[in-house]
Image (cartoon, rainbow, N blue to C red; front, side):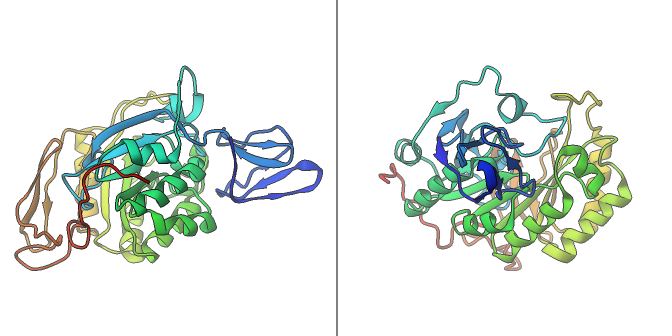
Length: 337
């Protein structure tokens, strides 16, 4: 355990956690809604500091990032805990239930010293509730010239997000719907996630948005149009959107998203955003510049750069489309911390 960041001490050994918009008020001994931040004698402690439940080398496209250093492999690490409660959670064993999970303890130096790779991705469970360890690893990663990525539900307060953003290069944020009713059902707030998206783009960080299309939950077309219009107007028309297919998991047994519906929503989104992809459906879409030039061709996890320059610009029209090359220099070898 380690003392947590972002909390305040209240009367009678109570604590107010200030990491995410839930702002849990915790009695001595009680645990927050995330399941991993506990009041112990009037001090907020993180129960999952350094605890890793999953660790793998993955193609960066699997995160998914399509416009952030395509073709690279990243070290993906995750812990336990989550501050939302999605009925369709695909990683519920580590996010919510912790049953049969044998998390191994690492120091943050272990992560960077013992594993090669282009960068580190914080994923699998919700990285926000792993904040302290993520921040320590990300700081060291920057010293080792490695890229850092956060795959998140975006449900985090502004102050901790602002402290984190200098050390995270790319964000993949799950925008789960576009009504407060949907977010209430999933244990969060739409306004909180919208604020996160604005902060990320305001700090000029790379952002890609995931939208899991769940039948009978967030499949209203008019609401979806409102969402993509908001993304265009508030964040920019070049923000990458991944429309992903849902399949039954955890507590939700609704039939999987039909490919036809994914294609329909893809066509809608393309009217407002320049770069829209379909995931979890066996449909691999290439990256094509707005001028029509094929930039990146994908076949599963195999990626081929065709019309893309080393600086991430289209070779035909010069538009900056993808983060790659440029000032980033591959160091190789093992980071010594």
